[in-house]
Image (cartoon, rainbow, N blue to C red; front, side, top):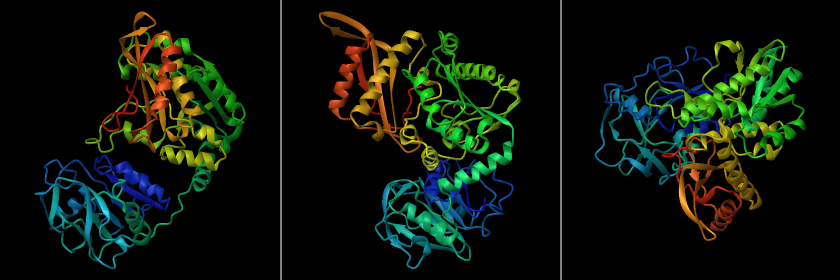
Length: 510
């Protein structure tokens, strides 16, 4: 792919946001670890260096080999990248004497510079670093300053190398997207041709060539990712796609049959398998979140393997893995980027499954998956479905899993989600769900003292789940929902609302 940007990751929490912003410009990009760059750089027309939690002055600081990039391809160095070029290029980086974190405003912009075209003095940017560049590298030219940071942006003469000490990818940098566009389009000369239709055409063509007449099995979940993956594969290989929808006993109320009914109208070859008893038996007595994930994953593989063997001569397993799954499950640098939790779509298969893997959505963010689905004519209601964790309600029931707890949470969740729909709030929320807490609390119902379960409601707004803010739902809605849950769900006498953002909290509680 010739219209391609390489992002070298130094472990910054913002690296994925850089990729998101580049994709929003309809330009394809990939994130690679700084210490494991692609051997063949010929397909990349520009390179971006991310920030990092390290200081360039530290002994263990990331030290990439840029000899095949610097001066040969347009290069944008962000924060750590900017300091790296200065520190090892004849400049000087030292601890900052003034606070360089948070909002700042550009007090100086060099005139007639393509990099800052359309950006005015006073533009707000976001700083996040403890070191600062005191002296520019050899042939460095100052392009912008703030009140406290003289070298907020610079370029290297006789190269298409640009560097900035602020983060253009975050929302707080008001002209950040424009600056990225100036670099990628005006300076690097990239075409803005990365569109949903282009992705569909390219992916279908690649799938046809890769799979040929082989048979593929796909585990459907009812969610957006697996549905879009199924439709893409169906476009490429038609009847050779065999979809299996497993009921693990941890789905939402009535979801197993509802999803099967919806898929029936999409022309997909889908088989429903009710294995709920098998999963719940395997989970009995287990409270550890990661163990629960592993048990569910193993049980799914066993059930799926049994069903896949009924399809003669199947060669491929398709998965709805998307980019955040890969990013969160595999440390980008082998160091600073930590694994947060294991994902059900990532981590490989046991040897006995002998199937090749195909993941048509592996390079897409969640919002891109939805846009691709829309371009293929998938209905808005299915594309607008909230994300639902692969382990299902098992990680929304804190502690051990029992059929009684699953039943309680299904009823609570149904009241909450249906209420969001009835009040016209569902599409204003990115993800919502209820958590059953491992505590009982005292209550009064009628004249009797109760000692029953507490549930927490969670609703967040986000773009792809990498970051999320809690949604300020109307008090009247929360009041009615709480009353409905307590009055209609036996065993629950207290409802709370989670007002934590990600980070520092995660969207799910386990």
